[in-house]
Length: 338
Image (cartoon, rainbow, N blue to C red; front, top):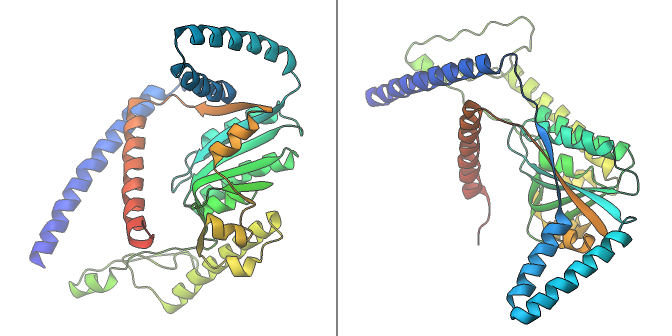
């Protein structure tokens, strides 16, 4: 135990130094940004050009010099004719949401949606390439509310899931008029979880007191260091059940065909099984869907980019690394592998 406490003391010192460095960098960053907050900007890229560019590159590589010259001449001619005939084509606005535990991508998503709602009509389509294993309830509730704005505007919303849309990720996905998934994407996890360690008995063993003072019977239900009570546990469980019920009602509202009690068990399904359970509407990758739409519609990829300071980039990199590390170990422990 002496070695254990020496190690804890060492970790405490390291943590103190790290926190001090973060505070200093944060303070300096705040001072530099004060009074000169620079707004982000919206980047728009036409995906039709990207797809056709890939095709042309491959076709050219298979031709000799003379054939390539004729090929380029024909493409230029057809492109000019295409510009005259494509004015009435449908439009698809493509957004990406790569969710972490805090749904940090919501800030960009809300600006992208605000921009497209000013120009999109009911004849257009919004496609969201969604990837998220879920996270904080309030954060994903806000992210889902952004997609609701699209549904409320009457603009068709398609959700494409190539890897995972579970828990808060599925809360967002279920808002789509159509949900498309790759065959082995992970979907579902319509449940709520909360867990924390309790060190009360360890502190008690070494005569260390930890006082928790509250005003209000359930201001604090479960704690890490204090003694947890039966009443506190019951209240905490009740709060989880209430949140779960709200989650179920939200999903049922947007996918009424679901047998919500059968799928809201916290389980996850792979794409092919999710289709059987009506969690999704079609098995297809986002690449397959977009390349097929590019034949008869103009695809515009929207990305709202914030200019970040050096300190913010360092912080985000550290946070993303920690998220990947934790999620990586969780997936190693809980997911099937080939």
